[in-house]
Length: 139
Image (cartoon, rainbow, N blue to C red; front, side, top):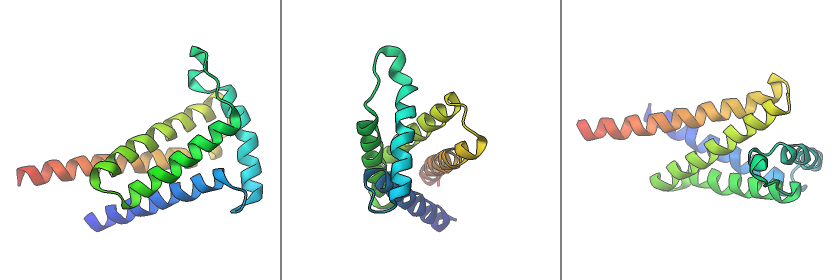
């Protein structure tokens, strides 16, 4: 069972590396990159901290999310346990923000599904990681 969670962590981490890289360059898929650029204009309009007077510039917002996903994905997949846990937390926050944004924009369930599935898998890894470490302390 532990091997299954390691595989899930690596696959999920690599998924975030790829999705982050797509946000950073048009060399992977120019069509998806253009779509992301236009979506982040809308995403910046409903940014959660907008209520406090902060609205990010869409291009910079796309870049920050992309780099965060690449770095956190690499750390989730291949980093030491502490950095895996930190990257899991960071990616969880990003997925919560993505779901919030899509709900505020009244996007379809189909648009919300990838972020929701990723959030669920990240939470599963988080719970499994805590359960596994607590279990080993008591054995």
